[in-house]
Image 1 (spheres, rainbow, N blue to C red):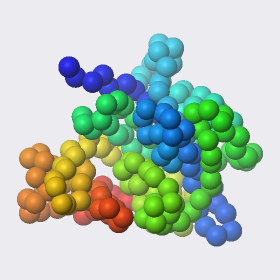
Image 2: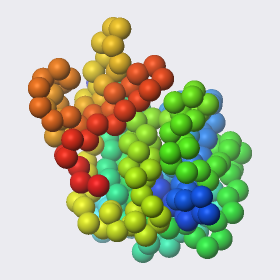
Image 3: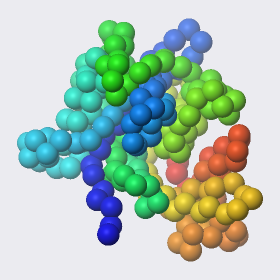
Image 4: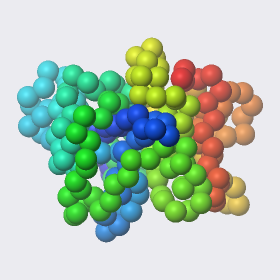
Length: 227
């Protein structure tokens, strides 16, 4: 049977710090069935009440984004400050699947975080390039959507730069095609990649994918998604 795809919402909170742009990452409880132990942005499922209250799926996702950020980090985000950043659907190989709206917003003025201690165990405000370095060193775990987002954020000078770039582009939609081959890195192909339709990473042409080696990961975006 097909796995149900549930609506979800994620918030990328960014702030300016003396050493550059910082983003908020939370570590999920290792015992959780989905993404246990991974470092993620605040977020979670869209509730049925939010769907009932909202005029659209996007509006319901905004309501969920505000609620989840409050529940997971005790941060109060203004719903009007949320910019639609991207949309990710969990690949079919996963036991639980979500259709997730990603939003980005400047962190609230009071950005002291309190995690709930059950679903979320730790938090860090971190430079995107530093988070990527820690992942490569095996110090932290993350999923491809987090990796792709942090790779984009690492190219930004400050919060204003992030928000300007997001405002200029159409939010990209990611419906990954995972390719697992023995002895080779797992590859997650995205729309616009030459091999996407056939799930064949060797077809010649433009690349839009994450290549997941044992240590090094790489996000290849050869002019497919503007940034």
